[in-house]
Length: 337
Ligand SMILES: Nc1ncnc2c1ncn2[C@@H]1O[C@H](COP(=O)(O)OP(=O)(O)OP(=O)(O)O)[C@@H](O)[C@H]1O
Ligand SMILES: [Mg+2]
Image 1: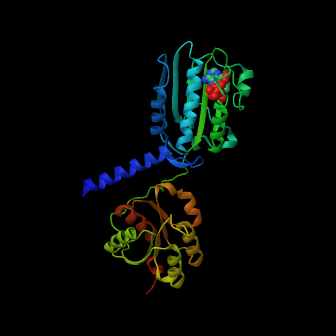
Image 2 (image 1 turned 45 degrees about the vertical axis):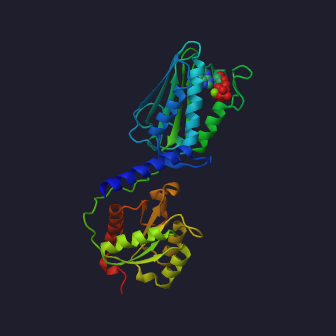
């Protein structure tokens, strides 16, 4: 059983990565780890660069979780590194890529963009011929190029600039003739996706109570019901958010806790939670999200949702979330029946 579970976890992680790399729609920003992405992008680049250009990666960032669109980050790396390699085409040289904490020294984004600790900094450095001030002023302009007709479109850096701006990030260029060129790209870190760490509870303090469990997939409802009943709870299930809301409206005070899926037809888990919280403020709600609909902890807290867990639902995580939420509730406030 242990093997099956760890194989399942590996599969989940693999799917996450594949989704990261293959995501097509342009504006899809997801929490993701930058390191594997940079490694992959550089591996691809290396095979296309001439032999006289070296490409090195140095990762020092303590936390590489950013809100980003993987495909677009790929594009940024491709453009910056290609430019650097092209600048050194005659002489040869090395392109140095670095990923660091923006608050760990070195350049930071302008103050009005936010605190340095909110950003990860990706630096692409070359020791090519550099640029004069006149060129520097125009590098981000669409169609600006110093390359011959047919050699460059001049769209590379314009695109990079657009992508960085759409990511709420910032880009800085430093260069001078004969001094090489450096681009710093700042990307915002994921707003704490992780819930604040609390001591894991060895045992549930409360194993009594009535839980409303909602998921549009019958199989998951069955598993959830069994899991929760195994812990000692009474479980009411619904496979439609509309029906779940009806059941809740009918006897809101009979439930101690609601566990709901996020992605459901007609009404999402977030919307359902909002409606339920309007009916009974303070009802503990746990939102279960899949990879593609990751919601930040801050956002669900804002709505008033107690906690969230990522699918697939693991017994331990479920138990911790319930323990945290019901542990906050005084026993005398538990629904009476
Ligand atoms: N690392 C660099 N070193 C020196 N000059 C650079 C560097 N990166 C960009 N430039 C200058 O900025 C100009 C604009 O770059 P950009 O990537 O937007 O277009 P391009 O490289 O000319 O064309 P394309 O990207 O379509 O091949 C370049 O033509 C070049 O003059
Ligand atoms: Mg270019």
